[in-house]
Image (cartoon, rainbow, N blue to C red; front, side, top):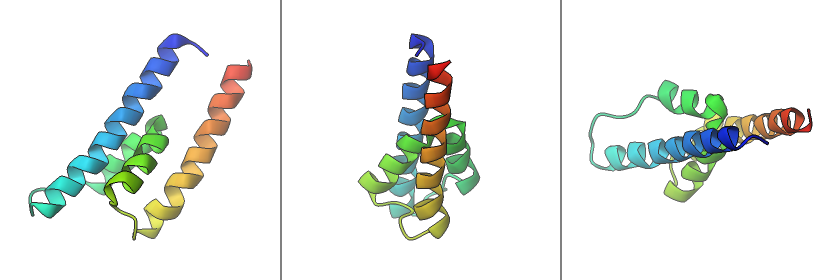
Length: 88
């Protein structure tokens, strides 16, 4: 796999992880929240692993069925897509 692609994936997943933590922090402080659309956008743009890890680490959005089921499904699809791309 291309080093640039790996770096991009690390950055996107790091950002997605950060977003989960930041939204949890804001929720606890009763401040303006990060929209679910923004959280999902980071996940869809190949940041599902980071979003899922952030969800587990920060215990955030774990009761939301869309996140609890959707992120693992999205993660599997992204890993499959990356596997396919790396084989070609």
